[in-house]
Length: 148
Length: 255
Image 1 (cartoon, each protein chain N blue to C red):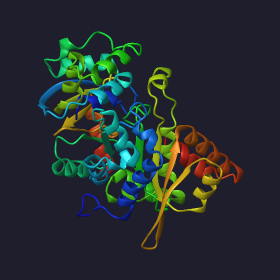
Image 2: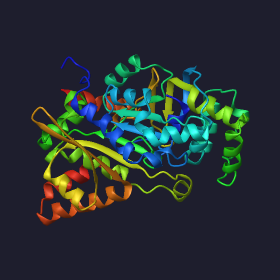
Image 3: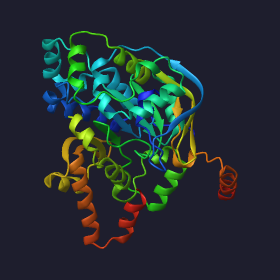
């Protein structure tokens, strides 16, 4: 799962963004530079979630991300720079984070307490796959009853 | 059941061909850098054959006008990114083993769009489970999340499609609407029923393509967000008109 995809996920139960924690493996897989795609993504991103995700995966691009996303009025200048062939540090960082950084193992935590597991690069966001640390024992008991 | 997911079949190819037809018709818009679809979601992607086909050859998006437009302007490439979601985790791992890690495809295990922001995608694809089943059969298929979930469609083979249409019709935030110039579309594969032809004549959906596969007649149709909303209101009124409270509550239960 790339950090782009992470930015678009929500908790299926509470509809809140999910924080990446307990990362066990991250892959960096370089792909072709996509500045025009990245510019189209900027308005859609949850910027603070992206910054937090970059910290969670200990990316070396954290410092290249400004506190806030470029505003709509700044985008035309960025587009112009991209079309004239400039390499912008911001877009290099977004390329690395959104398109090349894959969380292979870890957890996605909802602010309400439950979390979802990312295993072998695929997050399991089925509502009943949520792990609720306080209720795990009782849920397991319920499943056993249901199965019998 | 031994198999994890179904191999590609007529409905798989119909969804791929439906994308081609739809964007060839809308070629000029797809060519424009600001309105070109760049985020694509396939709901119920199973082993991701549709996404693989669409991601490895984006000619479906470019059409004849678009590629010449891009060449004439000397533009940098603008390739879409694809997300596939399915309730069948085993099928997703099967897809992941097959797909190159450099392809712009990510896979997420989830039910319909319940774990995704519904407002960000330009294009949502769904080869919906369209076989008419009893409510019990649909519930059992969804509980087990096995091969049956790929075809069990509830009443009129429409119940799961209706649930997705309901999730798709959310209104994007003002910030997204102003910056997000492309209009979003839902492309749906379903069974060809008179029901849908009434929706076409009411302009609640656009007809894209039709195909006979064995003894099944299949249909690809397209809905914009506003059409999805109109369609949903319409089906609700239809059910109320015949006082079909069972189906009305089934529609609510799917949410």
